[in-house]
Image (cartoon, rainbow, N blue to C red; front, side, top):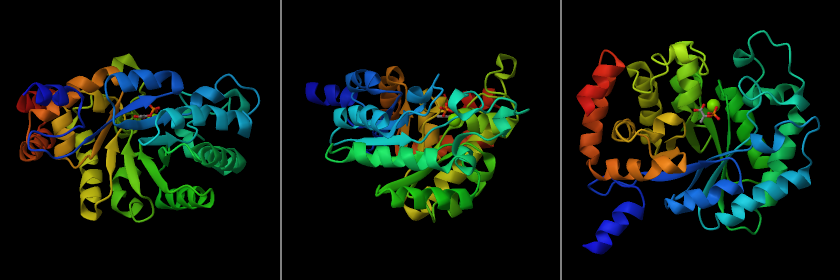
Length: 308
Ligand code: PEP
Ligand code: MG
């Protein structure tokens, strides 16, 4: 019994009836890995690579990138690391890209779109990830931020393959991408829903604007409905669909996300124990029922009330 109690706090994520839901940590560098280990994260579900590029007038060299990525991969030997290619622009402006002057940066050349103008930035980064991965034993998956179309996903997946990397995915941050999740899954191996940006673009509400926090609430039924489109697409073909935005850190929402078809949750490490405990308190069938209630609710407050 004592062993069961311990594994309940540290074991892999699962529902009360044993349906597995991977619980991952979000990190920005190797400095965050001990925090992920402390809460027994099963891997890294979002490795944000912007840190190395911030405040740089010149692009970091291939060798610098290899060093930074390898530190994380080595620390995660035997475990999954989902690394995200550079997410520049909008709330993450990078000097070396010289993007000042866009009237609407959130709607501008950001995320994967940077590769339209600067394809070599992406190919260098993928080459660095491939080199950093070799001989570390980490299970490295690569995904692109701010993808809107199947054409973008197809081009990204080809670039990942060309770099010799085994798994390519895209983030779902734009409603157009969520609506086409089934088509995206024909060309990539997995989806990861970035609920921070997906909320921003679904509700046309700047994620930095505190006055609009009610629109950015992850319990908004319209947001949950879009997540459900992705989850259903993943279930239909048996491919993973994760959530790596802030919504993944809400213990009350976790069963709803699982009920919508989400197969992994990635969050800041401190949130992980409560999410693990919440999942352990619901069967998969209950998760599905709670998901139906939440999506059918007229507003976020009632969705919360019906579920909790
Ligand atoms: C998101 O948009 O939800 C996400 C995980 O990415 P970021 O917060 O880095 O934009
Ligand atoms: Mg984002």
